[in-house]
Image (cartoon, rainbow, N blue to C red; front, side, top):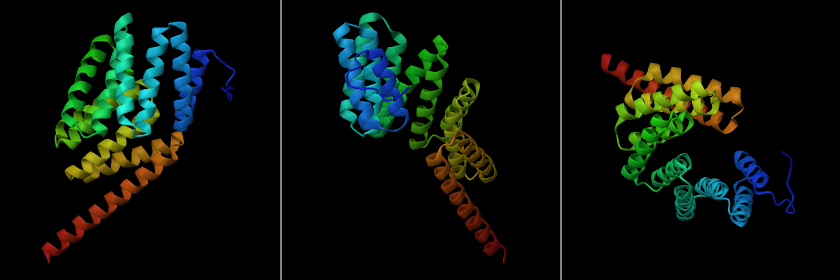
Length: 236
């Protein structure tokens, strides 16, 4: 999709352009176009479109670290969804709320909401939502010190991303599992996962993620080197 002009008033096209901007990490512009789409859908009385635009706004506010505005957008989206009986949209917004609670360090609340969304996604076979919510639940479990639970969520999410052909999601989860293994002292498994993550990120052209995985492998090398030196000093 090319660059849009302010004269284009079709909110369905506007929201697609906003999503494109968000994918390109142009969040300030994405915010402006999501707001424009929201106004268009409101003028039409289109609650379904309004709910979608509000979720877009909520996700964009997360990227801009404006968490109060993000929560407000997600709760408005839920209100729209409840009026039209859109359970999928409602649970998408709830997944966003769970991420906000993760970002604001309310881990228990984030995990509780994520698990509620996961249960809905399992019942409705909404695999995309299940994968993303399991990934978030895994991150929260790590922060709560529950590595076993985190590994289970990450691996289940990884399987879903592979099934869905989501290579970017697959790379993130390989990285997360690798870092979890580093923290657990499973260095061989960690190397395998982090290497796979790096290769996958190179495949999809994720330069930022590639740098992140390269740094993680550097950390793995330093920890492995320190462990070997400690072992050698004890044996002499």
